[in-house]
Length: 178
Image (cartoon, rainbow, N blue to C red; front, side, top):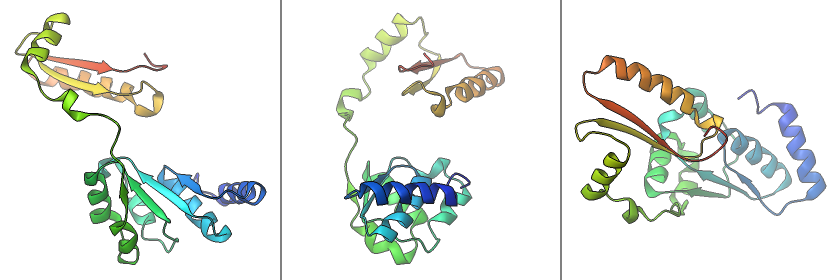
């Protein structure tokens, strides 16, 4: 919340006044709040996208959706499940009509290519020397600090010492933390 300061609002307003954009697109919740205020002030439509389920969202984030801030012009969710979760958990009644018309644009991944396949599982385990009885924890994504793989590794290290089963951690991705 602290990053959505009056200074941030002023800077965004200054950019909008100078460049006169046709639309504002906000991805993060703080950006969404600031963009909705500035968009309302300058009569600029605001698109807000939703990328994930509610699990990582704190009370302040949830409270912010109940503030009397103008609703975005369009809400885009990356899946029907994300749309449903946000609608059921965050949306005050005054904004339900916006959410009922939210657009779902699925992530560009063909999930059928990643369906469970026992032979692929065996090949992977053989390639990396992982026995059939080993419990594997996996993570796939951009290897950047904001994803906090360091926290995953630390948690896995603790988990490993507390479980009596063989376990392995497999992180797949590319980026500066590779």
